[in-house]
Length: 210
Image (cartoon, rainbow, N blue to C red):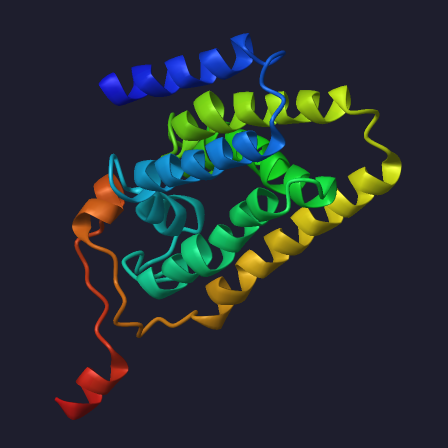
């Protein structure tokens, strides 16, 4: 409860002080920190995003490692996500680099708040609290800060949407690239949460050698 209250307070503070928060780099730093909180909610506490995705959304018969496994998850959440969120910190004047992580954060709120719960037939999806209490207020404040510098032209919106779309597409590369029902990179029971079937995948090589 303390963590939820802290997130709510942080998000509310950003919204209340949005007229004063005009430093684009600072807002991008906040968004990157929100990403860390988001990933903590997904994989640590409560931490069962993988189970909900594999078993609840995809209806996998072996959710411990298919379709998402620890290898593809690591690649998505570090190799792809970190540069995406760090780019606007390094290049704060490039609006088309700054907007995509904010737009993605707004999408995350919808995805974790509506889409995934509906598909998994659940009331909650890990990642929703961070998305709604942090990513949304930070994203809206960032857009407001950009507009104080002048109108956001169509070219910037097109580039930003294009970069966001490319990021979405890039997320599919490790998901499908590491797609393996015999993957040894399995999630733990904690990562499965209430979606754990109790069955563990057995690599084909192990069966063949028996």
